[in-house]
Picture 1 (cartoon, rainbow, N blue to C red):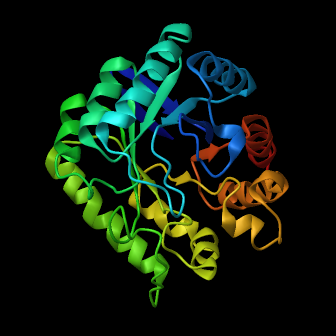
Picture 2: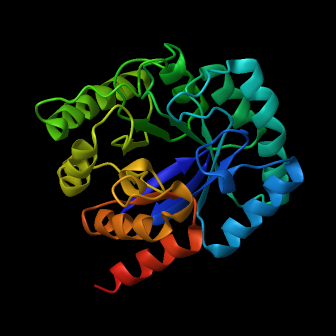
Picture 3: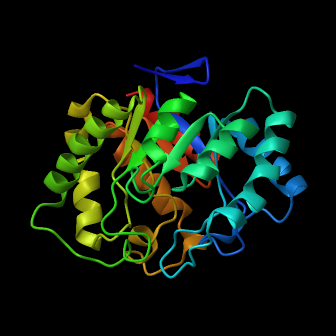
Length: 273
């Protein structure tokens, strides 16, 4: 069991939970996750919460391969109205802001978010860790190679699992030094890793339980699924459910997904084991 202090609200993770993905970007790799307006975002949020999502992860910067780095001002313009509206419509919802910019993280938390999800683990913005510590929110620390421009370049290592484990040991120490209390680890599936490395990480996911931190699994509809199956992101739901099940059996605590209902079903069934 893990507990997360979300701006004074204690969230208990006694069994795996679902994080629903909401994107305020026009170019996210899975079109169905994109929101066209604030009203559309509210409707999608309602559907996810009704389907069993515990957390809503809202992002304004696409991190798919080839995406453009927008900068803080564009992120803020896109994301703050959505967070404010969802927070007002669903005051009990736990909102996570998906950003690697400290300025955006701070504004989002002020607007109603209570978790910061940073794909760079605090490495792309030197102010991120101290900002999150001051905000007193949980921090999702993802493994990434390179910088914002090179993170999707595939540079395989001799032992990806060991590389990611060592990375988390260093990043957790840095987070603790900055004053961050609650840390969630995300192996970063699809970020600069070969297909074999992605599956190696999934197979070895249990290794990361020794960190004594919740493990976030972010494989929903990603290329490791649809390229293996010779399909597309749009028809990768079944494959996503298969990998979610494997992840749950190997220690995942949070499933970051596009399809909440199916992920909740995977959790319920694996819990019965």
